[in-house]
Image (cartoon, rainbow, N blue to C red):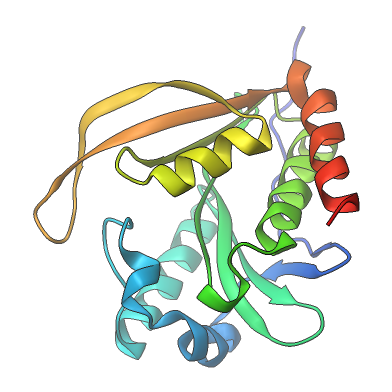
Length: 199
């Protein structure tokens, strides 16, 4: 069946606790307040430790958005402030595929429902609005916490890309790939909604 290319455009995704809004340089100060924490960037190939590095991080995300390969969001806890960032990346409009990645949440909001709800909003938009047939997630093979969290969402582990990246420290990173495909979305959606309703 012929499928038109996806139309991936900036959008606000609103949940009960978190709002995902299009990332802009206006979020810089808020992201610096919560995001210049070395522990947050342990598993990220290029860490962000200074306001200048956060500026470069945002500018790169916005450049990727302009070229059509990413759609970055600021994570805003509705009761308080900007608490992190995430994005659709490696967007393949022709093949109806996106990756959810470059996600970080300030430590005070980790192990809360915020990240689960953000993933739910992104997945729902990807499958139900954009018409994705596949959503990818990936993480450092050493990041056991992230690997377990991705599996809890309901994604399937597909394998490890060995010697996938050279990190800023010079360490060679192996990357674990996960995916959710459109035929699995209804089951994953129900699982996430149960988790969010039981918080």
